Image (cartoon, rainbow, N blue to C red; front, top):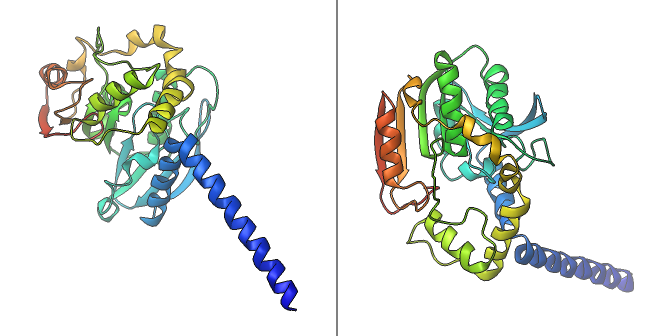
Amino acid sequence: MGKKIIRLLMAFGVLVVIGIIVSAWMVWKRPLKVDASFSRMALKRLGFSASEIPTPDGEMTVWQSGSGECLVLLHGAGDQAGAWARMVRGFPDSYRVVIPDLPGHWKSDPRTGPLGVDQVLDGVEAIMESVCAGEQAVLVGNSLGGWVGLLYSRDHPDRVSRLVLVNAGGLSVPNPPVALYPENREQARATMTALMGPATPPLPGFVLDDVIRHAREGPAGRMAETASEMPKYLLDGQLSGVTVPVELVWGDSDGLLTMEYAGRMQAGLSRARLHPVKGCGHVP
C-alpha cells in the first residue's frame, strides 16, 4: 500500500513538473496569448458568459452579462474581448453588456486568410440584429472598434443612442509616426511606447518578440493584406454624416492617433465632446 502511494505521489510530481515547464514555455514564447487568457478568465469571474452568433463569415464569440439597454464594447485590431475586463465591473448593474471577439479575432471566424474592415463591420451588424435586435445601443469602440462603430452609426443612426470613441480609427494617417508592423525589437519597443504611453514600464525582450510575431501573423497582419481596400472605409470629410451624440475619450499620450488627430475628429463631428485622459496611450 505504501509503495502504491509513493508511485502515485511520484506520478503527481511528474505531472506538476510538466505543467510548470509547459506554463513557463507559454509565458516565454506566447506572453500575449497568456495575458489574453487571463483577461478572459477575469470576464468569467465578473459573471460574463460566452456564446456564438452567426455572421456572414462564420461564428462570432460574444460575451454577455446584465440587463437593460445594450452596451456594446468593441476592441481594437489584434485584440480580443478580454481587453475590457478591467473596465466593466458595475456596468451589468445598469446595462446589458455585450463584448465580442470581433470577426477574425481570437475565437471568432474567419480564423485564416485576409481580413477586411467590411468583415469586422459585418460582425457589429450581426450583434445589432441578433443580440440587440429591435433596440438602440450604446456603442463603445477602441481603435478599429471605434472605426467600425463610426461606420455603423453613420449607416444606422436610429439604432445607436450614443457613440463612445476611445482613441478611435477612421481618419487617414498619411505618415504613421511609428511602425504598425515592427520588424525588430527596437521598432517594437518604439511602437509599444507610443501606443501605451510614457509611464508604461519597458517591455522585456521576449514580450517584444511576441509583439513582432503577433503583428505579422495575427489579425492585424491579416488586415494588412486588405490595405488596398481600406481607403473606401475612411471618413475624412464625411464625419458630418454621423449624427448621433459622440464622446471622444482620448489618451493624450497616444503616439499614433495623437490629440491633433482627436481634434480633427471632433471638428468633423456635429455632436461631439472631447475628454482627454492624461498620461494614457492608445488603449487607456
